[in-house]
Image 1 (cartoon, protein in one colour):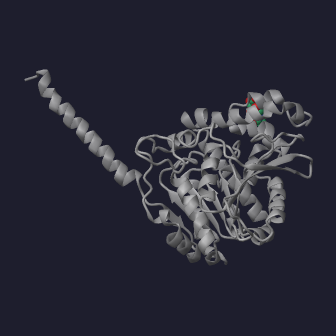
Image 2 (cartoon, helix red, strand yellow; image 1 turned 135 degrees about the vertical axis):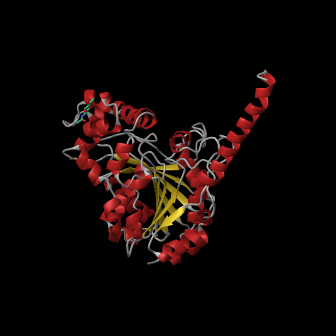
Image 3 (cartoon, protein in one colour; image 1 turned 60 degrees about the vertical axis):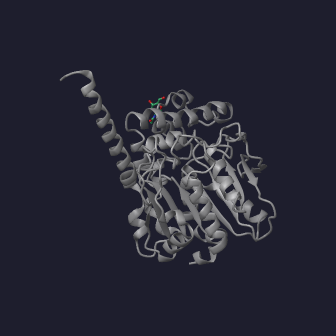
Length: 393
Ligand SMILES: *[C@@H]1O[C@H](CO)[C@@H](O)[C@H](O)[C@H]1NC(C)=O
């Protein structure tokens, strides 16, 4: 009695129970089928019949299934920085003299029937950011042309005028779309926006419904923040959200502002001490983004960037793809009710896990070119290529 050996089986059986508990939790709580919110039967049928991942369980990475970890490691477990995609770049001059980079990756044998996919990356991402590259690869593997937007100052594009970009201003994006229409007048086109790119895309779609309808067959919006105020509030929760995710995004933006300080600081609305001293995205936006685009307060800017309340203005089918545990777009701020409204052109696909642009799969935390997000996007693009006419509404 009380000898060390007698505890040994107890320890083992405790470990076995814990392990069994975790495994059951994983299989019953973590791995789940996505949900589809829409009142539009056409869109639901399109998804269920042609984007088959929607009908299957999503098995998040066995080590990294928690939303914040998925968000952080999503940027690590895809193609490394050293792996560059061989795009051909075109520089477009905007009406204020600023420049935008448009990067093309074309598969072999393209003609005027080849689908063109316009891709809008997130906040400080460019065509060579890991998740953009993996999305491009999965899209071009289906035989579509990828055209990736590089915002002012990103992906090697210089800043020529004292103006950057925001989550609610779509002027640059519209000029790029005009160019794409000129370059590929007859090709079918869709747009895929990720994170902030999805927000800007939705601003364009809801403000230019006629032009959007004459340009794009449909749009896919991945990990967008539909309600900017909820998103920013969630990003201020301690500790990981505020200091790692929010702090990291703020530092990326400050790096950009610092890099182009000479060009930017001619604007009277900028106080660079404040811009570079900002600790959070809200502070940075108060000092940089909001004044630059003419908003009195950062609150006004976030309200303008919110698309939750304008989804009824979509003129083409829009597919939203979000994880409930996305720290930048929490599950209770997603446009589920709006997607379920009568006459909705939005179908929202949600997963319980996945985080922000995470959606990592696999038993071990290893790099992959394709996780759940890429597979979904590739299936979606394939579905549009083969059954796009089913989306005409
Ligand atoms: C601007 O940044 C400073 C830090 O440099 C911060 O204290 C301030 O709150 C920001 N301005 C606003 C209006 O939030």
